[in-house]
Length: 557
Image (cartoon, rainbow, N blue to C red; front, side, top):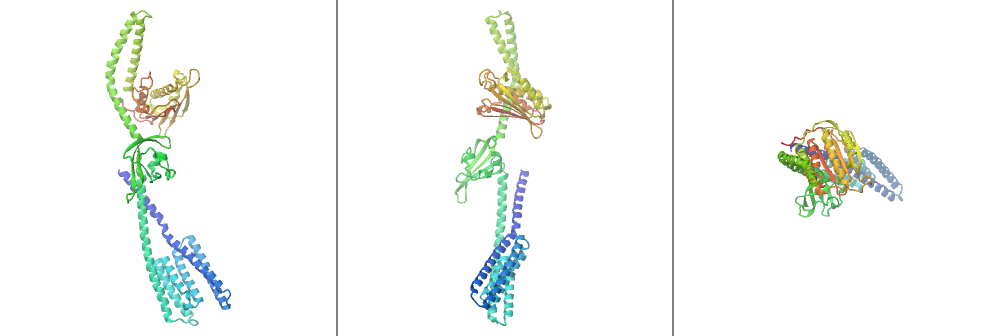
């Protein structure tokens, strides 16, 4: 619990740090955007000024043409400086310096236009106020103060410069300066409020990013699968655990009908189990809970399903039940040996004596032969049963499982059970610590079962009735896998659940102890055995052995 919590907290912290780190370089982006937009606004303004000047002065006299020439020079200079600023913006360095430069450029442009159009009496004096507003927009209150000071100084300077030809009235200068100061104060206040609101918004965005990262971390870290759909039944979310279980990617299923992949999940089921086949072809036993998602107003916004892979748990429960049954059988084994084998030996001995007195070929001799044969069969059954309930602990030694399989297959090729079967081999060296003789018994039982499952195909003399494929490969970590597959009629689902149960068989002549013995031997080696089958599609038994896990202890005698 502690370790998992620490991991989750670390993930959330990392996500929050990543969000803040992503937001850090964006701090200059608002200023950059404002510089770009104000540059465009300035270029549009001077372009309109240039075009208007050309139109107005086209048919005027030499004095107007001279004024137009000065305006053209001012516009061209503005274009040149704006291009220089654009290069600086492209480089992305010194944005504050560029902002002060643009404030100076705006007020310089305003001063130039005012000087060319009548100094303090010019109708373009309002351009100083626009420069003040631009300064407040760019650098908030500091920009407003700097722009106001430059506007007042520029206006007073123009009054002194043009005083000889255009003497200004003191009242006009006072009105201009008051207007600039009031504009600066109002623009600075509004810019400060806007900046504070922006900071609060940035804090809220940071909090939202942290909460989103926390939510994402929680949802993605849970070991259960989580699926959500919208009211139309389309997939909106699938977490990593759900992707791992189903073999699907969120990008693959987002926006697609959930019924296409998740039809096994019943809507509104409080708690249920079902079986699914994932995209990798594996059958999974899944427990799930389905519930409706509602918004704050109580309106349905979709559905959610939380699901868990219970395959290993159900297999473990089955193994526990099987072990309990085997333990009960072990406790009965000793009594069965005394209660059955001793009377059976007495009966067989007595029949042998009586058979010696019967005439050869008589009915009595034939009946006694039947009794002796069935007694021998019963003795073999008891022997195999005792062997199953009292297994010998494996005599482990480093063994090449591929060599054991090859030797067993060489013997099996000459067995009558293999006459109608074509055996295919895929054997790679895989050395594990095991009992080679017991593993030969395991493989022989699996081969015999596979051959018997396909022996009924075709008629005599028609060639192989089926194929048995035997493969052996090492596994990561030093273990090994041994697989026996056939293309026979397959195994039904109910039979799969009982196939390793003692005395369960589908053949009239079978004892039902072959696969149970195989399971017991594999268990004694610390390994596992599983079977995959579909009716009509054959069966595949897979034995997994560890490098050298301790053998299972024999049952109590």
